Length: 144
Image (cartoon, rainbow, N blue to C red):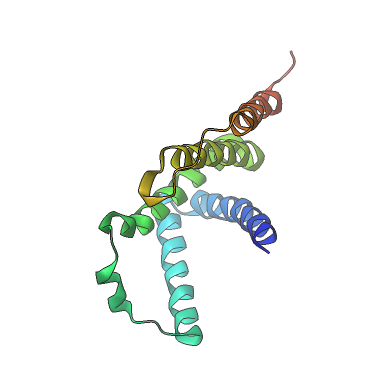
């Protein structure tokens, strides 16, 4: 099930990037990013009302506290996706974004950052990341 959810997530991110870039063209980057965060908040509140209502006060018990910065990071993600899609187009931006996600996620696992269980070094993962970087070069390569 996680495999299909991840595929859906990637597809939704690509469509969202295109939508947000179009809103930015007609307004501004911060209006678009603000709208994304506000509408996401509204959806979260509605879903919270209908699916369980765990107490919001639980946020005060979250540890370590820095993990509460996910929303801040989300705003920065929205901004950077809008700018990259506007500059590189949807496919080029998505390719770079995904490769950056792979590399950073592997480093997080490898060094056990942010409370993630440390994973042993694996040559095949490094090779996979290198192939992904090669894919960017091939994808962006323009014959003259």
